[in-house]
Length: 212
Image (cartoon, rainbow, N blue to C red; front, side, top):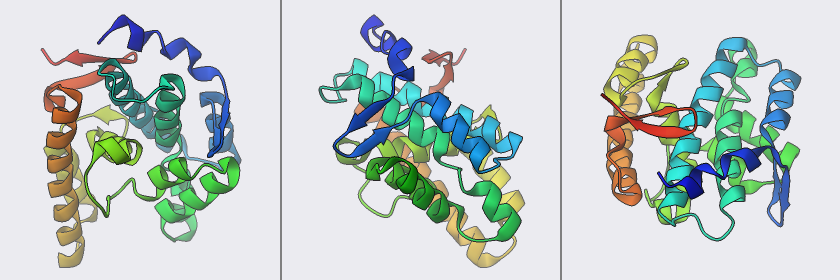
C-alpha cells in the first residue's frame, strides 16, 4: 500500500457534510452506539468490521479507484462499518430486522443514503456485484463476512459458525448457503478490483498485511 493511502488515516476524525448528508466521525458513531445501547460484544464486532472495510477503502485509494475525495470516501466506508449493526441490540431484545432498523436510524441521524444503503444491505446484496458503482455496501458485506465476533477469519470458518448458530431449518440453511456463495464471489471480484488476493490478507492497524 502506498504512503499516500496511509496518510489519509489521521484525517479520518474530521466530520464532513456532503450534498448527500453527513459523514460522521468515529467518535460520533460511538456516541450513537451508546445512544442505542449497543451491547459491548457488538461494539467489538463493529469496530473490527470497520477496520477491515477501512483497509479495503485505503487499498482502493492506493489503486486510484476512489474518485477525487479520498478522505470522504474512506470515512464513508469506515462509518458504514461502525454503524452496520446499530439496530442489532434492539432486534435481539425486541425482534425485527436489524438491517432495516439500523438503516432507518442511520438515515435519520446522517441524512446520508450511501451509509444507510451500506447498513440495510450488509447481510446480502440484491443487485450486481460491481465495486465500480457499489463499493461501499460491497465492502461492508465482505468485511462483515470476514469477522466472526471480533476475530478475523476466512469465509469458510465464518459461515461454518453461521450454519451452527442459525441453520436450524432448511430455509435458514438455504439462505446461509446463498450468502456464502455470494461472499465467495464477492471476494473474487474485490480481489480483482483491488489487485490483491483478499483471501490471503488480514487487517492490522489500518494496513493490509500478508498472512505468513
